[in-house]
Length: 311
Ligand code: B12
Image (cartoon, rainbow, N blue to C red; front, side, top):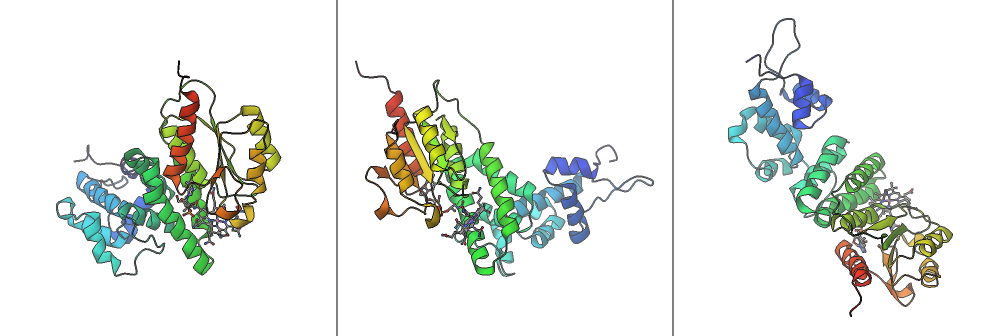
């Protein structure tokens, strides 16, 4: 047995959790190492590891830690699915970030967010992107949790630290998402947030979705002043420009008018985000309803330009 027993560091690496998380699971829920060789640190046996794997899986699926630990202590043979374990949990007050009708992964992410557990937050997002792709991850996992954080913040004035940590983890996971090879030639799509607009995550989601389908883009990020936007447009001549505004205060339609009047006017100008009001948009500007429409429009324009002229 001694040969197979593992240190806390090795177990943490195998499970992809922090050593401090293991310590918490040990102290709070009794899921500790059971092998003790006199004069040495305690070691985790294969049976301990199996229990911790259950704990790890159920908490990632949204089951409250105390409930997950109860199942874990019973061993891997009796463990339920995350959903059935959670039914017993729903009565204890439920997750503190509301996620509406979103699935177990969103509930797990909401719980990890409340614990400020950046390891699980990042892992959950990365796994979803790898399995389901960027668009489904944004719509089914990230958006519900982000909206829930916003609602809870609105109601309580709190959760600012949660909002910042989750935002950072979302940015990192989107930036690390798999990229298909882009065809040769300069990127045809320019992404920018409106002047003073700090909400950049939806645009980062679009960037990751473009990368996933092998469409090249340039991303100017948050708070882009109009002169800088025009400079970028005139220097790079993009086929499509996506300008994101999340709030009414940053949705000045003059920014869109300036794009339409640019020396190298883009074929397509997209006003994306809930900040824009449809009735104030200059003629010729298109307003997508969601990420998949923004993606489809930008890719269609890129494809139209890159298609060889008919002979
Ligand atoms: C994360 C976050 C932040 C982060 C942003 C980090 C980052 N890098 O993006 C930080 C902490 C910086 C931040 C700052 C602020 N925030 Co903030 N923030 C949020 C939060 C929680 C999520 C934002 C997000 O990404 N939403 C994305 C999705 C979830 O939004 P959605 O509206 O459902 O989007 C849909 C449509 O737009 C549509 N769609 C249409 N076209 C397209 C195109 C594409 C490409 C996509 C993807 C989607 C799409 O589909 C979307 C869903 O996919 C929201 C809550 C919320 N409900 O959004 C608050 C929220 C937007 N913030 C808010 C506020 C007030 C602020 C601050 C002013 C706070 C302050 N006092 O400092 C500042 C500064 C804002 C500024 N000047 O830009 C308010 C805005 C209220 C309003 N309507 O005016 C909100 C709604 C929170 C709240 N309920 O009070 N914030």
